[in-house]
Each structure stands twice: as structure tokens, then as C-alpha cells.
Image (tube, rainbow, N blue to C red; front, side, top):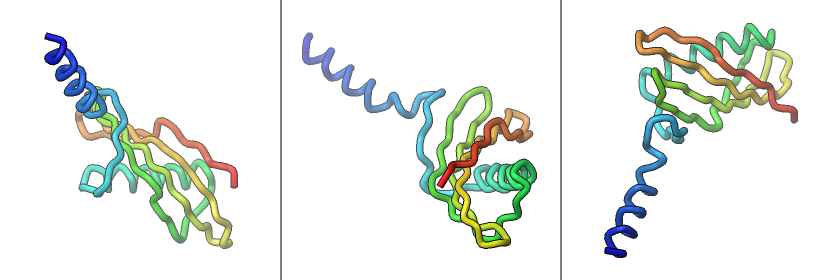
Length: 108
């Protein structure tokens, strides 16, 4: 009986990060992530009043809720050559609409 409990606990912990509500790192961009990224980058550019010339995506995370949150960590260079790091979250609702829900510029 103890063995079954330990086996269940191990199984539960191994799938816990894949359950709805948890953030998971994304390795490959698919079309929904690309659309969310382009939308978010455009909104961040407006909010930060910056036009990025070069952008490097550092990390991307996905969170499944009643829709999907995408968290992007990026490093960019503006038209003046200044490096900036930003983190932003784009929410995609079940109808496919996007909204920028969080944005922070990281200090270098």
C-alpha cells in the first residue's frame, strides 16, 4: 500500500507542471505564439515609446487558463543603439482576441 502511495505521489508531481494554471517554458514558436509575440511587441513599443531594431527572445512561457497567457522575456536594441530588456504577458482569450496584461522594463 505504501508503494502505491509513493508511486501515485511521484506520478502526480511529474505531471503537476503540465496542469492548467501552471507556467511552462516554451521551446518552439508555433503560430499562436508568433501572433501573441507580434501583438505584444507592438504594444510594448507603444507603451515604452521605443522602436526596436533588433530583438532577441530570451525566454517564453505559456500558462493555460480560461484562454492562454504567454510571457515573453526579450532583449532589444532601439534605433539609438541602447539595449533594453522587457518582460510582457499577452493574454489570448478563447475567441482569439489578444490583450497586453503586463509589461515591465528591466533595469540594466
